[in-house]
Image 1 (tube, rainbow, N blue to C red):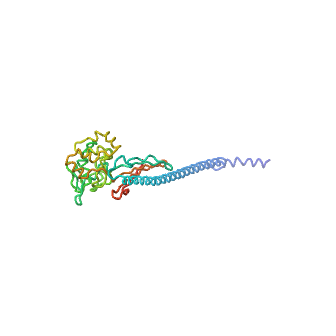
Image 2: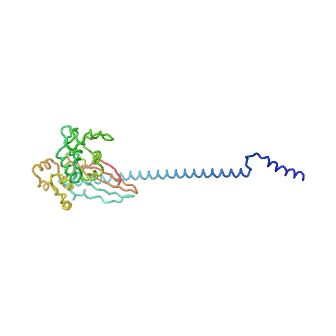
Image 3: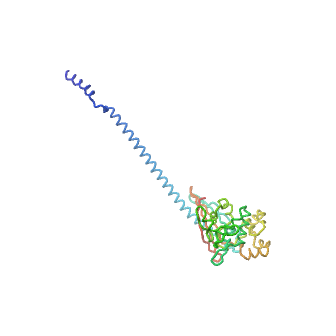
Length: 344
């Protein structure tokens, strides 16, 4: 009894003499369990973040690979459509070399054709039905100098389109290599080197009409208005009367608006034949105009340069291929000389 009482009596003493600040064993165990729980939550959170990141990266890699594969596949399909367009032009050249107009096979758009996972469509345009910006200059030895008559024709086109006529002289100065600014409208290197980002004029024939955007103040709105009526082809390439828009036809002759005013009649006649033919066009010209336009080979009835536009859609991926095709009149071979890409 005494022993048991003595032992019991020691326990309070031991409790009273416990080191201050040290928790009791039960409290210590509860604290350790709290730390373990927080650690486990952190580990789960980190693992979740890592898993989500790995999953997202994997999904993006898979999507990028699928898109890249679709673009590669779309490019090959577009090249096939381009070859189809070239073959159409080759067959057209074999059948008729006297004229190119909208009644021929090349002028019929390719309707949407189903392919694996999508479709392909496209059409051909006669680029010689537009005003050739490179015709603003002529070669004189090794120099390119402005052609005042061509500049005046572009001024008339700009006037018909309700754009400032000053751009004709500015575009001619961009291409010519004489270093002299046209009067009254012109600009050479002195103007362009004073821009916030200085640059110089091209002083050579342009390859794309988008170079017009390099003219200070020209702007996208003017470009979009003018672009359907202009092109960039070799110097001396004639305009095809059979496919030229009424605006371009009226810009060829001073003071005439017969084609823009009779636009509906032009559209209806072109469903059946070439209009206007060389004979119809020159019937209303003076001797001087006939010498300039007909004898100077400014206009004609045939074309060598066409642009193929092909749209390819595979899944959610879209690809547009623009190809400038050249048809050799002597050999009747058709080949692409310029390609560009975009998204539909």
